[in-house]
Length: 369
Image (cartoon, rainbow, N blue to C red):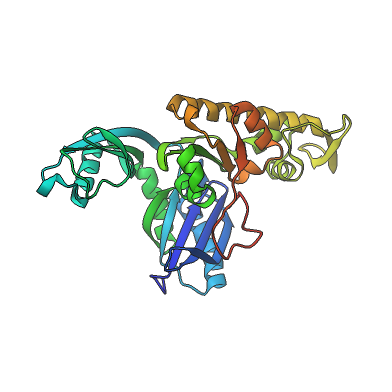
């Protein structure tokens, strides 16, 4: 990439869309978007590559558009990664401080983090992230950076994110097939969190729910640290397929109906309101009760929200979500979903939009991105 020190490239190969973004990084680390590219995804299922060549073609299409808009040649990318194979857990590490004056050094920090991750990994699993949550010095907690402090024992709690090494490599192979290289791999919901969450929300306790096409990605913060991540194998495509199955619409038509008239609330919908749509086995357009479609979407939304609620409760983070939940991703655009989420989860919910990034047009300031 030209201007390597000034331009960064992010790539999201999702189940439904492939999205590339080029941004200029200022001296104070602010981002200014200089080019974007988009393609409908192919060759993926629930975030996992099932056809390398098809996925690579989508990457190339998105890259060509981003290069044309920015005038920058793309060689290296930071790759967002998700999928139902991603797993995470919290663990602990401890070391003795034996250096001069018992002061903690940067090397001590690295050593205690290495101690925390020194656990046997099952064959075929890779560590994607090791995220420090809190350091303890002689059992005194609440420490974010212990360097320079004095003590005899240093402990750390960390959040470890793992993934299937072969499924991860398949994603990298698709990028390589598109004549680009992967500089870094980032868990998708961590990248989304940086774009839509505020520092106060991360401090007080918040969960980000990113509803994509094939998966729903979750990350929860407390005291500015990641305490929980998970990936649920359900997303917006399930809503579309429910409509198609319930009404015998073609998939493409069901997606159109979901986007144009879909809602999870029947408030204000007349009893006799009809949606005109193509139906398999019928000629021309066919009238389908809008309340019927609404009920299909509402039932699926409740299923998804109950899974999210159970995930947050099982992780133990639910009681600490003082700032509530932020929903983003294309699936969050479904009319009435925020209100239904508040009702189901019992905590404040807002929709998340990209913020603090220059160069974003109104079209890009949207949860789907």
